[in-house]
Image (tube, rainbow, N blue to C red; front, side, top):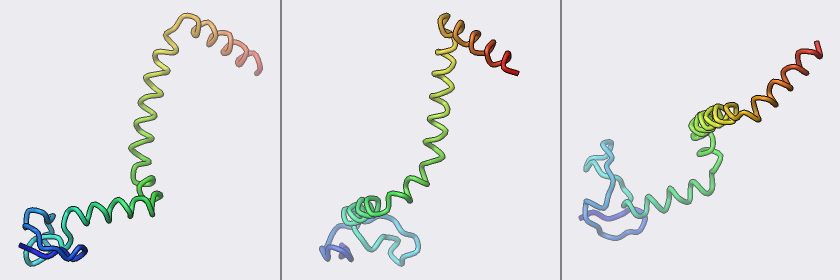
Length: 93
């Protein structure tokens, strides 16, 4: 049994996360209290999470866009539009 630093309740050791820096190799807060803290922190500091996930999100969007463009360009009516646009573009020089 161990006492949670936040809620001050005695809980089983299985209710605490691991922390190798501590003597007993357990966090000072129980998992329940830590999860509440993490949720609140994320709400108070959304920019931290946006920056962390920006690269992943950008890569996912890029992959989606590439797949969409491949399908879009394969349609016959869009091929005709693209040829007209390219012709006008090259004539402007």
